[in-house]
Amino acid sequence: MNVVVYVSDALRADHLGCYGARFLNTRTIDELAAGGVRFDQAISAAPWTAPSMTSMVTGLYAHHHGYLHWDAKLDPTIETLFRAVSAHGYEVGTFVFDTSYLFKDMPEANVLGTSETLDGAIAWLRENRSSPFLLFFHNWATHMPYDILHSERKDWLAAKQEVIGGIQSDSAWALEAMREGYRVAVERQSETLVAGMLEELESLALRESTVFAFLSDHGESWGERFTSKEDVKGVYHMHGATLYDEVIQVPLILSAPGQLDPGVVAEQVRSVDLMPTLLELTDVPSGELDGISLFDEEGDRPAIIAGTDMGALTKLAVRMPPWKLILDVESGEEEAYRFDLDPRERDSRPADAPAALRELVFRELESAERRELTEEEEATVTQRLADLGYL
Image (tube, rainbow, N blue to C red; front, side):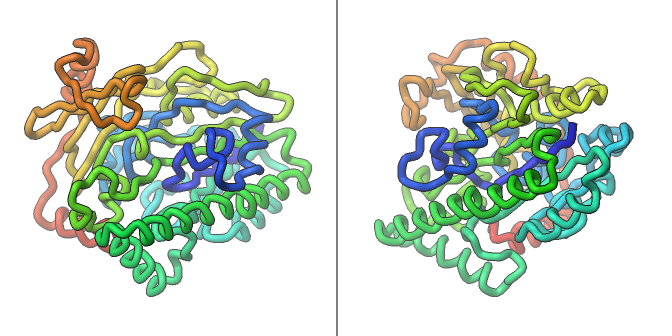
């Protein structure tokens, strides 16, 4: 069984028709979901790309693998999806938004170039069609500033600043223009990029022998959580700073014609469950992971989410329907929301949260990989985040 993992960065689940959206065209992704397995409550391990993507390909929570900034060092003994399948005869090829960031210190990922177009990935598929393969494709079309090529650095930074300025102005017109830009980017992701990838698999007669995993690393917000919009300084305040559902709930679809029966899974799952699932589908042994196969009937699975700031663990949350408990690691302050009654997470009720959630989050905190950054490392982290518009 071949594998394609397609990650649409910063894609909100509620902006896909198969998750209830009615104001944009995502027919290709909707059809993918209709013919596959759609997970209604999939929770990311972190609210931004570096720790979230590392969790996706290690099956470990972010506070366990410790990759909390772009220049962190992943313990070389930690198994990755790439290395596991390579050891069992798979060709691996990865295409990312910028080769200076994602998986840059993970040689087994075999990062080959940009994902800003499909060209490189399609050429690689044609070259490797006769071997079992894992193609990992991480696209930034739905990442702010939406649908601007990251390679066009000057335009990208100017567009990013325009979006942030619009949020800070608290203008209804600017907010709607930004959201319209996002809708256009989501439609392009679905109807041009995902559609093009699926069409190529069909034309190469690979679709029937390929599991196609479509998901996001995190969602997106537009300053809703900030009373003063001037406090929104960069991308970090749109995703990264908070652990609310608009940022940590993600779409997750698995499609394998003839292999997986179509359906919808209502129970909560996690992005850390992706790696063990793909290893099961490819008959590759799995070691001890935080995630478990999505085919194991577990009911709602408790999801642990790590919030970070400047490379440090700052928040830890547990989401277990119908509750979410968020702990501020430094102050010890708590937030808790019963999202079946309060889906927008506006009424914090920590005193009412089940004691088991508090016990779990503190147990996870004790197991967290934590290290203080040196002044030099902090300066590097600051520069890298600024380069990406997070600051």
